[in-house]
Image (cartoon, rainbow over all chains, first blue to last red; front, side):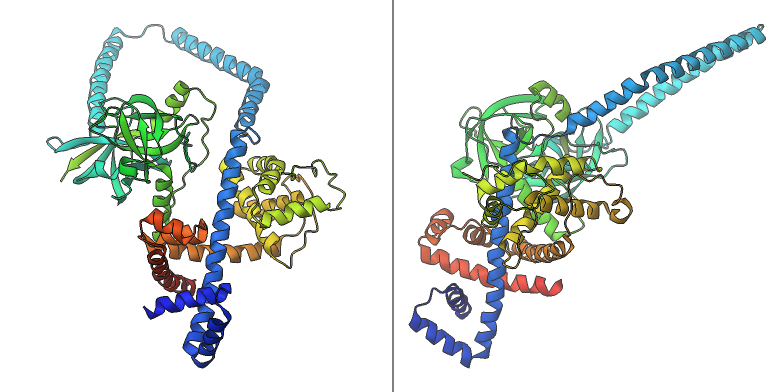
Length: 367
Length: 201
């Protein structure tokens, strides 16, 4: 208790909020009690740092908002197009050279094959048969390869107690995925399945049950990280009635749905989530909610049983907070959340085309 | 807001700094939205071009520019600093330095990087900036360790500048005094964490 009073007194003293009488009393205390004096010095430094921390945070958030507004108004633009133009330029420049090179290669190939047939006219008939056998051998081999390929596709051991949990999506291109924590309940192993049906084993990095967010990392040699994530994560508050869409796995294949933001808070005024009017089914949990610019504004996590089409999503700022906390705990964790989306301005179907490769079905093997 | 870039299109070779430019510079230190927006609008594309044509991405450009704005903010708040070149030149010099450092081939590449503007010396300013960033991170780490509800409570007071009544009703305390008590409890804990972290560094 005493410590609290000292803290309060010191803060008031430093801010100049004490009345002259209190101030005098406090200064005598400071002079006679070196311990108090030391505490005042510490607090002075600490509170100044606290103040500066607040200032920096406010300035940063102002910078972020400004960037966003200017981008929205078209005052600043991405430079992607320029790079594309460069490639087209190069192609235009070298098209003729490429064409000449290709035709030379073609002519040479024809010439050589002609030479071979001329110089070896009487090939024995046996060879042909052998060749056919080889073909059927090849056929056999290729069916074996197909079955092996299928084996790769379903890595989960037969007979395992599998629950098709929900949906997850890429957070960082190096194999980090985010989903709802409740999807992973009781999991012994977690696999994710890509849109083209491949399974990858993952590791649960961290779960935050309160915010209902979990971070997975694909730990699988077969996984090849892509080049860049098309979507970003929004830090801004989404306005009421803004159109949103989601992709997820309520069944074995990816399903698209759209809706709008219907309330800023979730069930019973929960400020960590927001309410969306959209069609969602079991399996959509953990799926991303995108705004019209292709920015993630939240993670779908629940629907209200008593009402139709009322769905709740954890807001994306919770993901930022979640990752920031993780990074503070583990400095080596190299995760980057993109905030700018390269999908801005693209129509819905081309957005979905680019986004869907980064959405994965979550399969939970129960322990 | 009256900040609107009348300083647009100033001839770079002339180093006369207008009163308006100084005013914008002061306003940056006060975190005034209009000034931030004007400077952002005026200079972002230059930096964006610079970073992207030197192996950077769109995100790199934004990060570098915002860090340079942070340096500008620190300088504006520092009583010893006086603006002796245009904001544009200063921002460009800082961004250039930051980006080359990030690419870690500053010495090798410096002569090969195309110049977009003239450059002023910013080494010392950036050293100071690194120190301030370190201190900011110390506090951020301490804040990361304190846990809820302390984190939100302290943020509401020191970052979002809410008063005790607003905080009490937002967090559901019955009165401002209880909220205040809780705030000091949190503050005492944060102070311990902060100094532990501070000694670590």
